[in-house]
Amino acid sequence: MMSECASNRVNRRRFLQQGAAAATSLAIARSAARSQEKSAGPVRVGVIGLGPRGTYLLRSLVSYFPEVTVPAVCDLKSDRLQAGIELVKKIKGTAPAGYGKDELDYRNMARRDDLDGILVATGVQVCGRIAVDVMRAGKNVATEVTGPHSLEDCWAIVEEKERSGKHYMLLEQCVYGDENLMVLNMIKQGLFGEPYYAECSYVHDIKVDGSGKSRLVEADQTLSWRGRLMVEGRGSSYPAHGIGSAAKWLGINDGDRFTYCNAMMTDPREAHVQVVEQFGPDSKAAQIRFQMGDFHTTLIQTAKGKMIRLDYSITNTRPYSRYYLLQGMNGCFDSRSGIYVRGTGPRVSDPEWRPVGEFLEKHRHPYWHKDAATALKTGGHGGMDYFCLRDFVSVLRDDHEPWVDCYDAAAWNVLNHCSALSIDRKGAPVEIPDFTKGKWEDPNWRKDRPTPVSVLSG
Ligand SMILES: NC(=O)c1ccc[n+]([C@@H]2O[C@H](COP(=O)([O-])OP(=O)(O)OC[C@H]3O[C@@H](n4cnc5c(N)ncnc54)[C@H](O)[C@@H]3O)[C@@H](O)[C@H]2O)c1
Image (tube, rainbow, N blue to C red; front, top):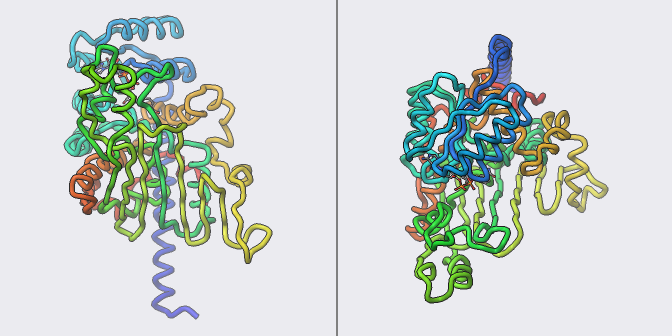
């Protein structure tokens, strides 16, 4: 039987939970009301960076979101800029203004008064700085997954977001994956019990393109931004595709936070060998000293005594793979083996993995349940890109904070800096900053926004 004291505690917890749930519903209802007020007009988006990724995002925005208009685009390369302008003109009938006469011309674009938000898809080294400038110019902003790259970038996007009150969204699409959102749904339904350990990864051989030519070294033997990443840094330099889901599953920044990490890597071998094969042993390219190892593992400890393992490689000779694992008190999801939930399956005494597909039918997230056909039709990354862009359009249209905000972007991407430091110190622990400055302790502090979590029951 429960003591009076324990019973009071439970009642108080229920009271607080009910209060928080009511506040959440109210905030989301307010956001919906704002949405009705605002949704009459177009959602006006500018795009900076029209490489393959930026062009793809631009095409998706103008093709699949009828409410989106694009008044301006920007790229330093005139052929890419022109192609972007033509693309919008062909689909929407109106040519956007073009910017990119120098590296800071995007600031002139950000000062226009006909933009609700700007999407930044430049290379990693400048993405964070541009996002800060865009917010400083009074515009909402979304960046590609690279987002803020250095420790300074991470603090800068948080500080500028707080100063300007503008929205910052990290366009991390893997958190929207069908299985990734199903796991989130199953966690919210309590099927795994309390989650306490996760594994995640990004293993993508990007050292060559489809024709087998280096993506790190250009034809003229200068470094691309990807090559600079490998020469100037080490550590988990592209963490968001892996860590995003693990962080959302474990409630990072929503009741828990990263505290420190330890990292290790192998020596770098693969990029050098490829470059020598392509350009020859006596070439200028063969002299390049890549310092990023071929395989990295970073172990991350959380304030609530949980742990995450993040694997990372952009040079391993193998097909693309992103594997995940979520361990809870009542079961486990392992993308490479299946799902186990205690007490289910044919033989309780001899547990077996069950295929993920079985669970997808029953626990598919409402986003996928309702709109998988549309998402898959748009192509990008098996449909994940669609949901990510749809949430970005929703942030601009309804003027609400995003699910993956500046605090997530900073906590996830600072792992680049922290893992590199740990590697330099032979795997010693490195403190991870608390970008929320204590706000993470309240699991409800970010509940006032429509997100893939707010649409879940349970
Ligand atoms: N989410 C994903 O799955 C995914 C996939 C591919 C790439 N990306 C990310 O998208 C971004 C772009 O990738 P990409 O392959 O298109 O790269 P890219 O280098 O081919 O294109 C980047 C473009 O940005 C432009 N640019 C750079 N600085 C600029 C400035 N100051 N002003 C105007 N334009 C500027 C460059 O001229 C270039 O055309 C990167 O951050 C990359 O990590 C994400």
